[in-house]
Amino acid sequence: MAKVALIERELKREKLVAKFAKKHAELKAIANDSKRSEEERAAARLGLQKLPRNANPTRQRNRCEITGRPRGTFRQFGLGRAKIRELAFAGDIPGITKASW
Image (tube, rainbow, N blue to C red; front, side, top):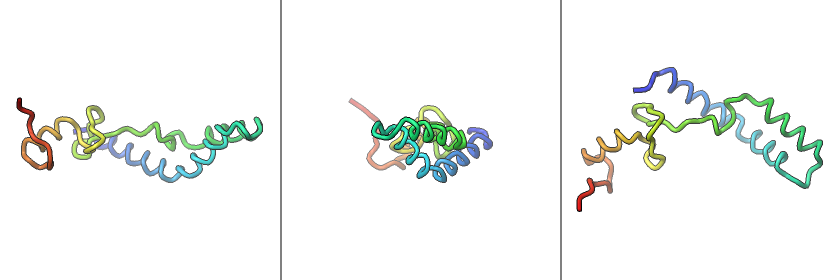
């Protein structure tokens, strides 16, 4: 089980990303638009830098929904590999069976 503080920090980042998503997307579009003047693009890059650091979506980390484990997380399920194994063997995940050949 991950520390509660780390899980809470990740939730705080999710909220911050959601709060600034629209502004971040607008500034990013302006900064990458080659048809705009260099001054406008520079101002957009400055605006991106002034946003909170944790408002950047790349700062988010995928974590297991149950344990909070940061590594070995499958996006399809949102669970860590150990929990997927446990739940699959118990038959709690539909469509997943133990491989045998």
